[in-house]
Each structure stands twice: as structure tokens, then as C-alpha cells.
Image (cartoon, rainbow, N blue to C red; front, side, top):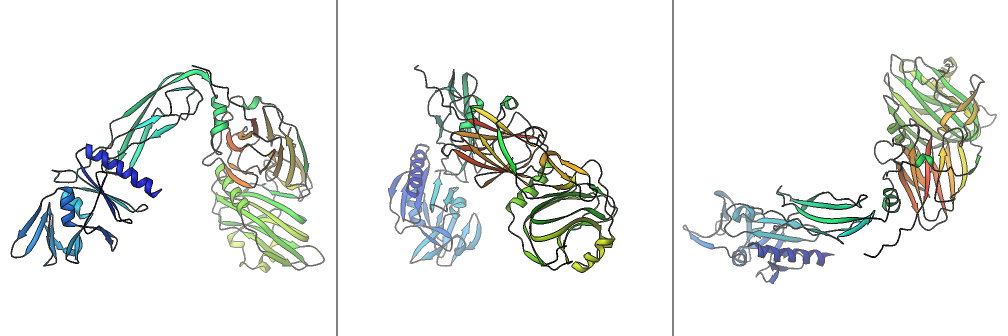
Length: 568
């Protein structure tokens, strides 16, 4: 790679020669030197000392064909452009200002060296250093009295001049800057592929680091009416996961048959009352073994308060309790993006600590930061208990909170009232936090529906505080483990149906935000989340994100082979 970069610098040196500049390229590691692309010898060679590239001043004058004037003002000195050097005095003068010789160069072994950056002022030269390749390029324009950066030149080509609709267009870009400066490129009219026939004009402007831009350079191509890929099929074949693409037919695709079963992992949901107007117990129930807690509440008290989760051993023997993982997000309002953050925190959280509870003992599993009025908190946690544990979710105003001791909280707990649900949001205990599904991909396209209550049934549960039956709309907090069979040569895409959505999805153990930024909103703009070209099975894991709207579609497409190109 290093020699390839050096070759490119040499080629640019050849271009510089045509533009009446003198370009000196120095390989500071290999000791090689090139003038306008031709190898030369500097005697002595350039060197690096104390982080500076140093060049022998007489050799610089020779190879750049610059006059080196001898001075005799009572002491020997030389003048190179705007630089005067008096090595016997250890002094120099740069652009009329007296400085120490060490600021602009040094005297070593009887040879005067000048720092490369000093030549920018002395000669109006341009110096560019590539620290990775350790290449220094000095460009000098004869007759320049100040630094004068020439304009870059924009150049590119396409791999051919005629394309079918939906055929990838490959760009070969080879713009250059005569001074060797880095370039930023701005294309207009450029697309990965074109989906309407006709003539297309692609234009490039290159800008160097000095802010000077090239003349526009354009290439015309023709897109023929024959179709290689539609916009949808192009995206399915070439887009990276995380990109959205147009598909107005997404809701018309057939629904794939799913075989599912709910695993015995209780889901404890605390979301009612959502707005908490006084201190009290929001929800409580008893569990043993694995369980998941999902809670969201907003502090509507006139004073700051904390959300706490308490665990009490209600078994006859000691109980081991562990927080397997926990994710939380505090916010002034519940929006989809914040639900995504808490979900990502939960899915990526490390395992928590294990606590041992004696019979009747209470501990605080979780205690939020202080929540101001109008501030809410979203919490999700996976728990594992070896015996029966009573779990209590409460909002407690700061004035009532005892010191952080578990004993103080245990004393306060019986004094807190059970708060009534608000009749709008959900609380209760549901039989499963894990739904396992097996789906076989049949045909060219199909979809898996999540959270609609019809194709994906809602969980039925019980409010342990009131004894009333409840239903979990959207199945929020449930992990869907989907085994997709017949998955070879398929692509998966995620599309919202109920409104804005921001969450995460796992594919074969790899986690992907949905979407990478912002929210998904349009039903007809699904986000690609996997492409499988070899294995016949794909594992998908999804938890409906708090604060997002359900249902959603997981649409599975079968990749189609493109039609063969017709003869011209």
C-alpha cells in the first residue's frame, strides 16, 4: 500500500511538471527523493528531527532552481526568498522578522538545514505531509512571492456509458490537486442506480483544503428502458442493513403462518397509573424463578420523587435473587427514541449482582435518580429468584424517603397506599415474557405480524392488586424468538404499521438499532435488517419497544435473479 501511495504522488508530480510547478516528493522513511516524478539525490538527504522535516538549504535551492544569494553584512549568511540565514550568529530573518536559527532550521555537521514549513513563507511553497506513509510533498511555483495554491482538477469516469434501469453504476474517481492537498468531492446527479430511462448527467466539483474548487467536470450516461432491478429489488440485493427503501405494496403481502408457544416466564408490568400524583405502591406481585419487570411512570407530584423497586422474601427459607440485566431511561415525556435507548441498554447490560434474602427481609433492587415534576422513567429488568419473592414498584416523594438503608424502606412499605390504575394504561402479571415462534418462508414474499392482537394474540393476565383480568395490548416487554426456516436467499425488512417506531432487533445474535437514527414512521419505507444467502435458517429476536406504536411487520423477501442483458 505504501508503494502504491508513493506511485500516486509521483504521477501527480508528472502532472505538476505540465503545470509549470516544481514538486519535490520526499520519502522520509526510505530516504528517496523525486522531482516532478523523476528520482533525484539530495546530498545530504532530508531528515526528521524533533518532529520537523529538515531539508539542506543549498540542495533545496539547487533542485527548485531558486537563487541562493550570499550575504556579507560583517558575517557570512545566505538569502533564500524571504529567508536569511546567519549560522555563525545562530540567527535568521524570516519575512523581515529576526528569529533564532533553531526556529527555522539548524546547523548540523557543517550543513545548514531549513524546516519544510519555513519554506511556505520563504518561497510561497505548499507543504503537505502524509503521517501514515511518511511522505512530504513540497510544491513550488517559480516566480511566486506568496503562497499560491493552484486549483484542483476534478476527474472521474463510469465503468460504461449505457445502463439498464436498476443497474449499478460504478464510478472511477481520479481527481487531483497540483499541490498534493487532500480533496473533498461533491457529486451532483449521481445515483447508485437509475430507475427512469433517458440521459443522465453526473457532475463533480473537487475542493482542496484551502477552499479552492475545481471547474465542474461532467459525464453523460444513457439509461435504457430495459429493467435489471426495480427500486425495491435493487435495495434488497445491494443495500446494507439499516437502510430504508420504497415498497408501497408492503401491507398487501401474504401473512406467513407461524407456530408459536409461550414459555413460562412471568411478565410483571407496571404502567398504571402512568402519571403518579401521590406517593404509593404502583404495582406488586409475587414470583419465583425467572421473571421480567417492565415499568414506566411519570412523576406528577408537586415535589421531586424516586421510583423504587423493592424485593421481599416471602418464603420460609433464604432466597437467592439476581438481577440478570437492567435498562433504564429517564425523560420528560415518553417518546419512541427514549424507549429505544432503554431497550438497547437492557439488551446490552452486563449481569447484575446476586443478593441473599432471609425470610421477611426487604431490599431495594432499584432506586432511581431524583425525578423532577413531569419527568418519567422507563425500566426493564430480568430477575431470577430461587424462592418466592414479593416485588413492589413504588413512587415515593423525596421528603418521605428514609436514608438509603433497606431497613428504612421496609418500615415505610406497609404505610404506602396501593394506588388505583388510571383506566387507560396497563398493569398486571402475565404468564409469559418469551414467545417462541417457528415460521417457514414460502413463496417470493411474506410477512410476520407482531403486536396486532389478531395474527399475534395478546397476552391475558391479572392485576394482582385488584384481582381484575387484564390484557397486554401490543405485548410490550415480550421477547419474540423467531426461527425462520427456508431462509436461504432471503432479505428481512422491518416496517411500522401503527405509527412511529424506534427499537432494536437481533439477527443470529447480532443486535441492530431500528432505525440507526430517529424513528421509522412510513409504512411504505421498510428498513432492511438482514440478508441471508447461504443458511436455510435465521434466528430473529425482537422486543416491542416501549413508547413505540404497534403493530409492526417483519417482511421477508426472496431474492430474485436479474434478467439476462439483451444484445445491443
